[in-house]
Amino acid sequence: MTSVGEIVSALAERFDRAGIVSALADAELIVGHVAGWTRGEVAAKAFMGVELDQALVAEIVIIATRRESREPLQHITGESPFRHLVLAVGPGVLIPRPETEMVAEWAIDALRQVPSPRPRAVDLGTGTGALALALATEVPNSEVFAIELSTAAAGWAERNIARFGDGRVTLVVGDVTSAMPELDGTIDVVVANPPYIPDSEKPADLEVLGHDPEIALFGGEDGLRDIRIFIARAACLLRHGGTLVVEHGDGQGAAVRNIARDAGLSMATTHADLLQRERALTAVR
Image 1 (cartoon, rainbow, N blue to C red):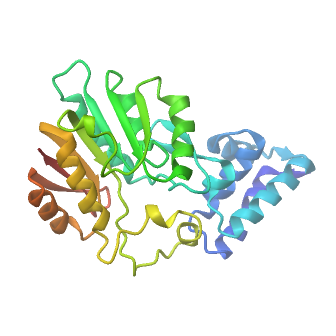
Image 2: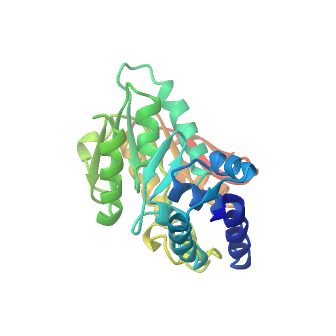
């Protein structure tokens, strides 16, 4: 028999040597994933000296080897938390980031202020469906359209929408520049997390570079190619007085504000995340 505390400590040491920043957290999450416990329960059982049988230990070691090779934990467990949701994720789709939860918050706030019994929103480049589902579930009287170009990513969005959408989210597989022209001028809130990493700036994290799809990461030579496209489309979709919320990279705030103004939007404002990094733009049609 091996105690929970022993296996967690051993895994954390292995992950730390492999350069994984979240070594202890990942060790606890893997043990919990195999044993069917929350991370808090793992910590409690480690404190109490609870032991694991060898079949569970063998399964944990196999999964830990995958994580040690820098396969994302979310691909191993098949899920990723986003606000109050736990989304299905895997190869072919961008893993939702914690900082994008703030982008969702700004879009949710805008949608809640719409003076309509049925406010409408569009998520451009929905990926897993994270932003679309956050809006639909936290503004339950809303109607949300989620547009995604990648068929691989759309497969994950379809799965998550089927689980959480409650009939309020419509998935559209297609190019954001041309999908659903019948919505033009009718949307209250457009939200987007486009690719914004310049092509020359390769992510340092092996989990990102080796596993997240490049189509969801890189935004051309200056990182602004897709932001320009998404903002131009948002300007068409939004009704007068409608709000755009778009995520962007740190240091891109001034350029993105100018893009929004050139597209005919007003009140262009840059917002910072919890680490005081430029994170998103809001603007009004």
